[in-house]
Length: 201
Image 1 (cartoon, rainbow, N blue to C red):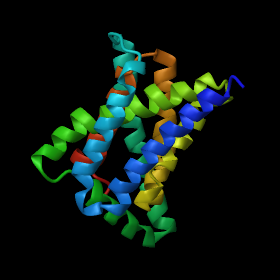
Image 2: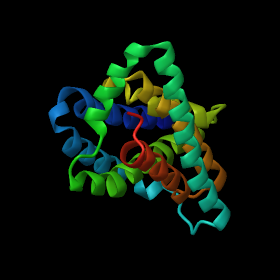
Image 3: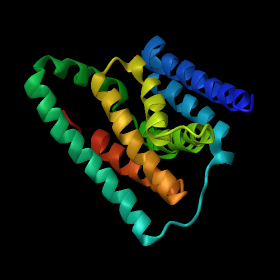
């Protein structure tokens, strides 16, 4: 009986995320940026009190920066392999970039100040913490799978792979350091490389 309340809380949290991302990625694609920004703002407010914060050490900053760069390199190589094996997947990648690439100045502000911190606050600070309270094995990976599941509405295999792999890395960083700043820093570096400085297309 003790698990009923934590499980219900986790399910309610996941359902909330699924509804918001369904609206953003699938139902109202033309309004993706305002809806996704509003969704992550709601999720961040919902989660911020649970997150663990402290001043990062120099080593933690290195972990954050280095892991973000390494993730980008892995996905760059993964894209080359995927397109060589499945050339038709370029269409999915193009559609995904059309949807999520920043185009207006406020998109960049939203990405840096709302979306990236919001995802980490919610998926690591709320969801992962709730999974860990259930005493499940491989809680970081389970939380990453839940993170991936909410991105299914984008209809892009590459995004699902990115979510589970990057989510596992960011979850591990958060669990290892108990510091929300570290996965946010890694996520920031990864997204800026992927969407702004060196897009995969």
